[in-house]
Amino acid sequence: MPLDKANESKASLKNWIPLGLLMLGLGAFFYFDLGRYLSFEALREHRDSLLNWKEAHLAAAILSFMGLYIIAITFSVPGAVFITLLGGFLFGPILGTLLVVVSATLGACIIFLVVKTSLGSFLKTKTTAWFDKMQAGFEQNSFNYLLSIRLVPLFPFWAVNIIPALLNMPLRTYALATFLGIIPGSFVYVLVGNGLGAVLDKNETPNLSVLFEPTVLIPILCLAGLSLLPILYKRYKKAHD
Image (cartoon, rainbow, N blue to C red; front, side):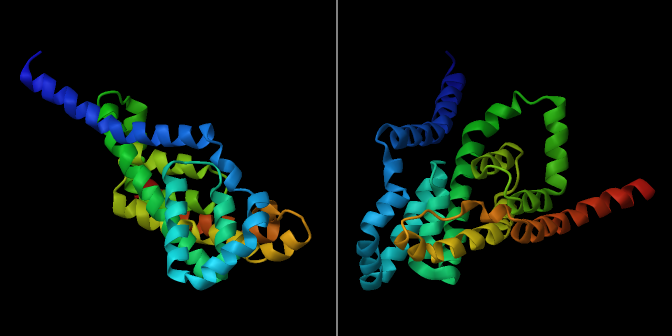
């Protein structure tokens, strides 16, 4: 094998290592049944210990919570909603929302970079005409597209982390649209988590469908619609020029 091709193969293999590590991490999560720690039963059992530790070591609690959230988003493990509720339970609505949004954005940026590194060069040789057309359209209005998708709580968070990377979206635009787009939904769940103590006292589970109630969902959908107005205006102007 020529030297250039050998070096190219090694570089290609290195690009796949981060994605492989993420897959191994996700597999380990299920193999060791780590999801049992992200449950209301576990929270009910360790509730007092968590609150006492948070009161005694606030900075460490904040960093630990952010680290846990970033890992959960990076490895795309189930349980992000529970951790969001936990943020409201431990830190209240304002600080809890800030920690959740910052951590989720950082985790989303990591998976974005991993996917872009591992699959970006591969897709360049495999793309079809329809993919190129979709990529061109997304690049023209990437911020508004992603912002609207992030605002609407109907799309899986992990999927929305991956697709922009495949469409070659700039990282800065991706991070800003993610940060702003997840604020409303995160705030709603953090508010639910803030009242989690009373729910646990009654030996109940919180109402996680609150985000889809009309009084909550309609305003969020309106925000998503507003974020699409610049795109619609561009198309209207282009059609009438």
